[in-house]
Image (tube, rainbow, N blue to C red; front, side, top):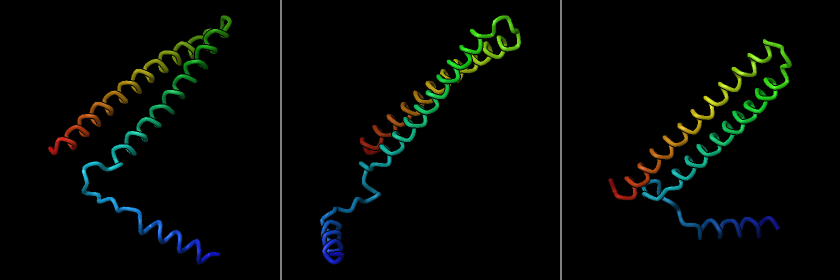
Length: 107
């Protein structure tokens, strides 16, 4: 049983073409893009959750100046965070796109 599995695995490995790291069309760009997208998505979700939390804190302050101030500052911080996350994602996407086009053109 194990001999058959090893034989099949060896045959599959023998038929799999090796990818040279010197090729221009590597998957490293895709991996980098996916990592950046995931990090941006997680950061955006966290900022949105913080925005909602701060909004609820502000709304439910009920005259408590300290909670109202915390909620207001949290809303401002969350909006700034969302703007920074979107700007960082746009910059990384533009640089990655430019790098991909340079690699594809042979520069």
